[in-house]
Length: 207
Image (cartoon, rainbow, N blue to C red):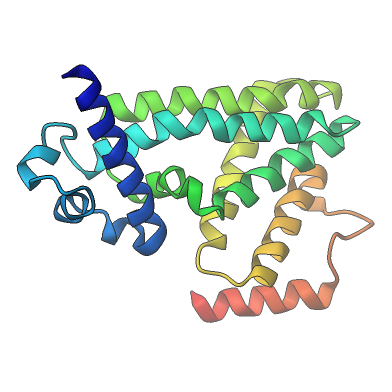
């Protein structure tokens, strides 16, 4: 019986990933999960209390994989600035990967405080990856700066939703520049002024 429930739960989570990939949060409904798995709708409630609970369970399964990919990308770089760039770009690339749609979908959900606490703990583990690089750069409070940097990444992820590949690349460049050079900018811009202007114009049109 326990193995049967484990397999059923895994099938429901796989179905949830497909639904999120195909249609986002709007597509993730209990009737749709039931139809995908051949279960009765009432049976779905035996495994999950709500849509938020489904996404929470997906994140519990998928977030360690996300963090491992980011860590591997950072480990392949030399020097603190390069590792910071890998941290930012890696998350933005993964956010655009349908396999990780559940993690991105969290921002659209109203979760209870217990769920939020678990998600915060997972994010703290991810933020911990960049603290060492920030310490190498001489930041007096690397933990605080790492948390703020994660906020920049999450804002860039949200800004990238529904954008073209070219627009997403510009957003990633801007996020990296902000992470490495702050609001003062860099003497060596990541992108041309014309490209940035085009992205800002596009953003204004979408607003």
